[in-house]
Structure formats: C-alpha cells, structure tokens
Image (tube, rainbow, N blue to C red):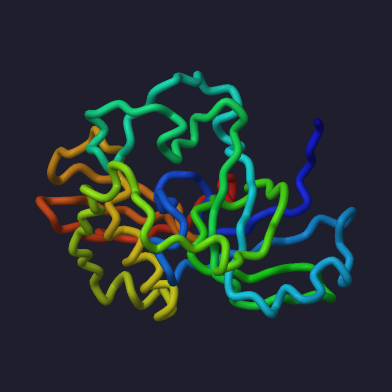
Amino acid sequence: MEIEPIAIFRSPFASKFGVPRQSGIVESLTGRIEIVSRFHSPEALRGLSGFDYLWIIWGFSENVDAPKHPTVRPPLLGGNERVGVWATRSPFRPNNLGLSSVRIAAVNEREGYIDVLGADLKDGTPVFDIKPYLPYVDSHPDARGGFTDDRQWQRLRVVMGDDVRRHLSAADAQMLSETLSLDPRPHYHDADGREYVMPFLHWEIVFSVTGRELTVLRLRPLSASRC
C-alpha cells in the first residue's frame, strides 16, 4: 500500500524540540491542517464543523532513517525504564506513523484548512488522514492506562518577564508558558542553569531550569534559514 499526504500541518514549532509529548496536554496550542491542492475540495470537509474533535494520522518525518528498537525509554518514566515500543507513543516506530486527537477550532471548507487546538506536531508535518472523533465509541473513561496511571507529568513553574511578554500576544505567551511548563529538555538533561534554545513562532526562546523553576531568559529573532 502506498500513501501520500492529504495535508500539511502548520505549527508554532519549527523543530521537534519543545513540541508537547502528547496531544491535548497543551490545550491552548494552535495549529492548522492545510489540505494539499490535489485533495482540496470543499465537499470533502462538509459536515466536519459539527464535530468537536479530530483524529489525525500523520508521519514522524524527522525519524524516517533513525534506528528502531523493540523497546524504548518513555520520558514519563524518566528515561530510565524500558517498555515495548507498542506500549508507548514513541516517535521511533517501524512505520513512522503518529496518531493525535485534537480539538477543532474552525473549519474553512472553501480555503481548505482546519484550525485545531492541542496538537503535538511540528511545522511541516505530513498528514495522511483525518477522521472525526466519536465520543460514543472513542471515549473509554474507565480504561486502564498502563504505566501512565502511576505517573504524571510534573509541570515546572515558568517565569517570564515583561521584557519577554511585550514581544508576544497574550495568547502566544500562554501557549509558550504551558509548553515550557512540561519541561521540553531531553530526559537525560538535568543540569541546573544550562541554557537551551527552542524555536517558537518567529523567535528562539532561550531558557534555563533551576530545580522546578524554568526562566525565560530572552527572545531572539529566528534566523531566516530556519523560518
């Protein structure tokens, strides 16, 4: 079977660094599914605005040639415990496919795009299919969640000064703060005071972490080569 993208995802994240590790965990995060010209038809999106959520089937485009292993170390377990790859949502999968549930913010049938909230995709990600989320079959509130039942994301306190906030809209500052609170650092990095750089919108966000507090040190314009 051959598949090709039916859409391209547009996101504030130019790289995978900083992208939330699960969909829905940053509810304010905006994104857009842009239908490619070959599949652009207003009729294909008819009726979609009557749903609140979507399933997105997409491709881990940066991991195509990365080594694949039968076990992985989930960040939620601190990167110290191995479990089977199919017991996780690791991006290092045999077929490089991802599945995300996102909230529909708006559907533009004529222009061929869907604005969504809560996605965990980087900018430029290929989308292979979209399907409506159906609560009566897709929701299982009493289901077990494996190792995630005993572990929760420990959010950081984010400090962002006025010199940073003045460059961002209130909505963008909220998106950034919620994203950073999830600690985007690799799970094996825990040195206090080390500076990290995360692309976000048209900026490079420079931050450091001390204990359970993350401080945004400064913003600098994203270089043209990375836009």
